[in-house]
Image 1 (cartoon, protein in one colour):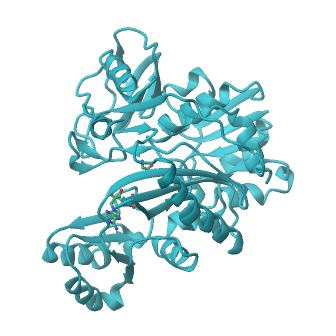
Image 2 (tube, rainbow, N blue to C red):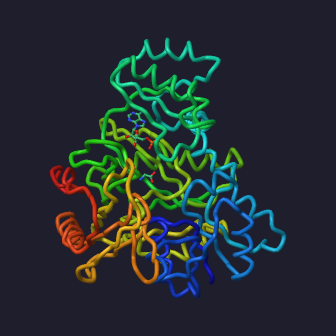
Image 3 (cartoon, rainbow, N blue to C red):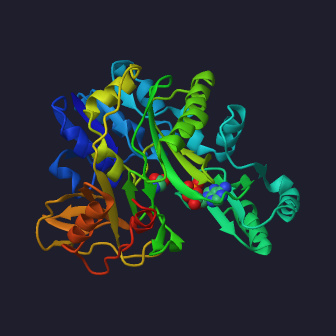
Length: 428
Ligand code: AMP
Ligand code: GLY
């Protein structure tokens, strides 16, 4: 099978790494890929905003299956455009069409969907320019902290949480009146604050059946001890100690089953991953958000724990044949540490030479913001590389990660030094 992976991050490198291990994968392409993906796949220089370029590549390279990594092309209808091609009727596609991707593209639609199908989530109200006065009043009726969410895609920055009522009102103004995220914040959800510990749950569905992939915990803040600004994710671990059988049974019954039922009943065009961001509040799951893709950096710990042939699994999903598929999970623990550019998540420089003091053997370095220029590996983004370590327990996985992190160097490199430590304290 000839496979094309869409995207350029650590998530896509990890998916490609796993796909490349399958005997069913004859040729692997990635568009656009990064400085590391060229070792296992052919990087295709494609502008993902131009769907015709993707369609042309699928035709030119006789692609049998397309796996879409990031949310933007999904929300922007890449899958719909591929499906509209008369000459690509047999193409297998992993990723929802627009009618499914709206679960990530609009937080209001997602919230209405959750209410309709009885999925536990925080109570919320929606406001816009016309109803902003009611928004202020609603804020006054709530207790802090105040949670405000831009309705549309805001590159992971659309959630603003504050203890101060004045600041919450200011945030509402910034989002709606000052168009902080353009049209994406024309509507804003004001939501009840959930207190607990977060978990990322991943489901692969063909729109009617599903398998639940290993769960993960993401470390979102830039600083040790969960301090400082939010980032795209600074590390992840899998499994997660508090996601025990009892909790995961609740997640499956109360969240996954009604979600897949809703997808089916709404007639959404959905084949692919559903990433469910959950809060474990006193042992009960509440959905914070849906994403219509895998998480990054979660993929870098989830995928190495999947034992199944990923080509088989994804092809089954893409052809509506997930029924009866069973997930087999590797018994080890995975941890990943994200190496970032100095200054990230604020302004940072690119183009720094990356040095490996020794080759990394015990772990898999998944590249994200890297590029190869004249044979030299350079930084090319905020999140540069995900160093994944595997071990028989959390302690071993983490210590392998950090030993490997010590082998990588560039000017300004930064990373969190406490990935997984909180879970070790909980006994993992
Ligand atoms: P999101 O961009 O939707 O992933 O949200 C970013 C982060 O905001 C989440 O990972 C949570 O840490 C936090 N968050 C979102 N909604 C809530 C909520 N209702 N209560 C508490 N924290 C929340
Ligand atoms: N790690 C969070 C995300 O991928 O959205």
